[in-house]
Length: 352
Ligand code: CP3
Image (cartoon, rainbow, N blue to C red; front, side):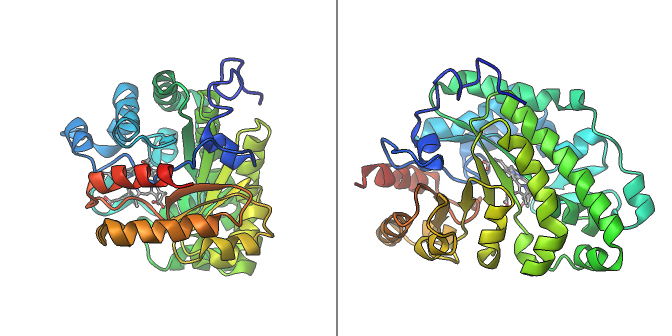
């Protein structure tokens, strides 16, 4: 699919932005920085806007979702917005019985574990994605030259919620299914790839200038299992976006052993968590892939002196990659003082 003529990457609004420049090997005018989960509970204006509205419902009200997406951009002067939504939104829109429970995460009405469960998964009617596209379009209209990052959950991470029935530390049922019944696993992963790919494509067509595919829990997998059971499905999602030319970031937690395999799934940029220093990550990637990351979220609670020293080290190590977008190693913890984030953005922008 080609981008529409009024897409911000085509009409020039965001093509020269620091974020897009860093993602595409250009020379950014300032070092770009944004934060995973920058919209959310760390902001009092978010808690006020969300009062009395369920999480998934707020994602499906376009004006509200756009407002929440814009809040951290106004407050922190970050170099990107990230759409306020959730990885399970496309499951909900397909008709899957899923809810997001505060303090827990996504919870399924019943787990999807058998061939019959997988065969019974509903089709996603693309028209059902209209509220997501509308939220993205409203946001893009307000953002001007600041790019919107669209995102989706990768097939493994989403399938894990479906198979486990909710959050899981070890993902045992999911990893067992791969080996016990590979055909059923591959059908499930192909279904999630289709649904999550449509969700991502809707955001791109509505004006997202980059995308991030979150395989948050892929670090639970060995490299051979990742390559055999997961990569082909993530590759299908990334290849469809690749045809639009929109830069693709791929990220997971604890994925130091998988960085090359994840890049080879078809990512233009690799997101790195705090466990692997960026110069080490970049060396593993052959110094030919821009990186994003990887300030340790714990340092947000260590005082500005320690945080800024750590950030200087992150910036120095990031120079060994052909592009670096500053981010945290994972999402903003809800307890974060938002003023720490505002000062951190200014600090990053002040660095040579
Ligand atoms: O600012 C942003 O980054 C955009 C918003 C965003 C949300 N979810 C909003 C949200 C993004 C990018 C996500 C992605 C997401 N959701 C991922 C991948 C990113 C990651 O963290 O690894 C995953 C694994 C999920 C599943 C999920 N949804 C979890 C684990 C939780 C937290 C549960 C909790 O309360 O601790 C959610 C709920 C969720 N998604 C919230 C937000 C703002 C909290 C809802 C609330 O305010 O009650």
